[in-house]
Amino acid sequence: MKKKGLLSLLFVLCFFVSLTIVSVPAIEAKTINLTYSNFFPPTHGHAIQGANMIKEIEKRTNGRVKISYFPGGTLTKPRVCYDGVVKGISDIGMSCFAYTRGKFPVMEAVDLPFGYKSGKVATRVAWAYYKRMRPKELRDVKVLVIHAHGPGILAARKDVNSLDDIKGMKIRCTGLSSKIAKYLGAAPVAMPQNQAYEALQKGVVEGTFCPIEVLKGWKQGEVIDYVIETKALGYTTAMFVVMNKKKYESLPPDIQRVFDEVGEEWVNVHGDVWDSADRAGLKFVIELGKKIHGLSPAQEKLWLQSISPIIIEYQAKMKKKGLPAKKAVKVLRELIAKYQ
Image (cartoon, rainbow, N blue to C red; front, side, top):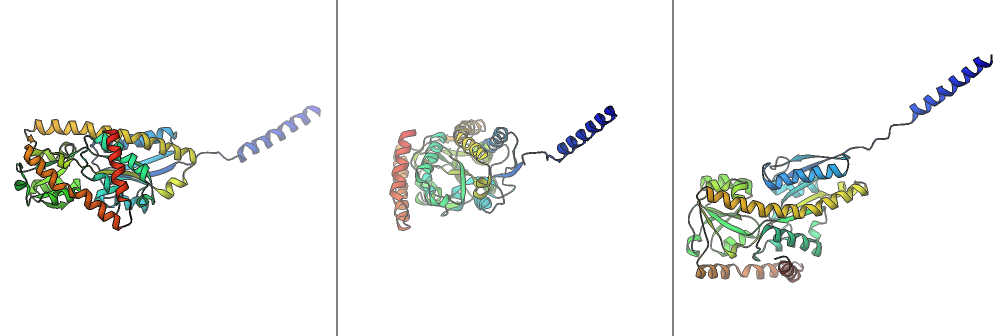
């Protein structure tokens, strides 16, 4: 009897233990699925670094975050990328501020022709400027990265050596580089990079203002014949990687920190890509046999004089809107001196 009783007691205990084990739910962290829209084509350095940024975030979150990637503007086109993030069409997006001119007046100051010497300098200046100014125009998103390309050049189907040569030329440009075209006497044609190759090929435009990396990264070197370098085109185009604000704020604090840390690190990553890409772009057009030259000292002076009113005009326009235009230019000049 005692043996039977002991076995019965043991059976009952095992039964209740098994019930307890079964009743405890498996605690698994829910995977956070996000999307990233990037306007650069898949093989471009900045599209590749976008993919690498995703991998780093996924790695540091131990797979708790998974990000689906859409390079080449396949999820949202360049001009609507920012609004796509705000509206939740994508959770993260990369594009240019200049593609929606007038929407980011404070950030537009970065693009002014200050004579940037490299993409890394322009990127560091743009990021530091954003952190110093904290413009209200970006309050609808979480800013992860800001970067900016190296000094612009004129890539053209015909040779240009003077203001007379550029007069009336149809030139693809964006944002404030449109102002440069106007003040040089050209005819600006607003157009994102993904449309420029065909436009140059078909003669819709006769030239393009861009960093030299574009001639390889977007293959535009194949459809131009001349590259003209001048300090008058020492502008940049600031670009963003932003995240839907509500989505960011819904993340656990430790995952928010991962996004903050990786974003900060990728500012320099994108800056390095710009300089590396500029070197590759130069090599590409040389190998294609395109002609590269500067301007004569007399023409260089004329071009610089022609574009000089742009900064003054920007300040006057922003002042009317109640924006800190003088401060913006002052901060940028200080930062350029620091990083240049």
